[in-house]
Image 1: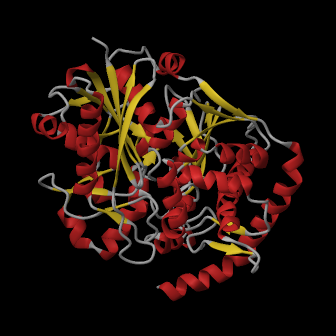
Image 2: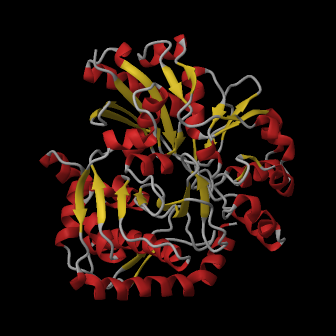
Image 3: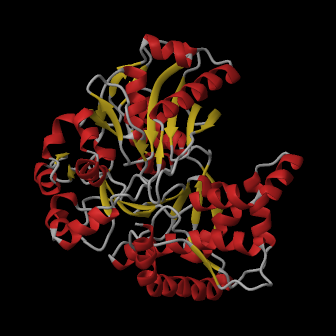
Length: 505
């Protein structure tokens, strides 16, 4: 019997279930949208039962549509958006909406820690910037503003750990993902007691999950989960990993110096390193595989901005896409490709930024002669300019970025792939397959099930380059000029953004 690997990916807006054969070929993928709510400015939440229900629906539909027998699924791996907060009560039940990683309610608290010198003191052992959507600030925010919530809390989980719990009944996380939460000692690979004390949340340590390596089997699909999903009871489930690490793994970025760019809900720009990089200007070091690390420059400033724009302003494009049997994003790509390069600029800060908690999105330079097509192109460009600002920081820190693998939703757009190559002035490669996070999770499942020996063997069997985008030198002057202006606008608007945030308070 042919064996398959199931990768589950719960992102910021979508629950996905994807099946892969052992060569890494995607057999099928089913997605279900998860509703997001915005109770107050900067608050971004979702129902935890809805996340599980959409995952159930995606898995069951996947098995039904493919006709693959449940006993042909050799193992399951889970990944998901990092950080945010998923809480269970002491009976193991969700009792409050989850908070997503793009939630910024704790921004003022992080600013307070910065002013008090706390963040300076905890750089070691964290080796990362602390920001509002991480687990640590959100827990501290709850302690200050929702103490009753923490009094009910029995278990603190991340998104993929909650789904893993629903599948198996086990409560675990993994070093790769937990190393991104501002709770983790990068040297000892354990929870950082001194940091918890500095943040005033030491008493919550007993609620944190056990840390288990990403490829280890931590449980098996329960009878209840089997009845709901259609999976076979007893199917092994591995510990899983952060979606950033999953994308880097499935892109084949394993050796020091190899880079991976994720254009998704977050704009992730990562480079594999042999050790942590002690540079306080950089965003984050995180644990990777087999003693390696990922150096990350990231912010919630990427393709999610396009999704918002399409939802709010692209009804005609959705109608056209339906008539032509295309995705609305295919239509948007065509529009951007034929739209002349423009003077309109866009800051992709709808869900936060890399320049401060008060930053806001906005279009600049519009005239009456501009159309919605120009605004759409500005969204594409603004996302790439912000990715470029992260790559510039890596370069200033001495990291040599000569080429990168592009993943995430943005990798499906050829016009976006070429724009990345032109702005960053490096070759961009896209590997086969659309669901890179789910495939990375499935690769971990394959290692746990003995299908692959290790990460290197999994990558050798699975990863194949599909597209390569070479920088177009003729476009460099245009993009350099606009990228510099994009940064100048960022600098001069900081004070105004702070005033706007004060009005929201």
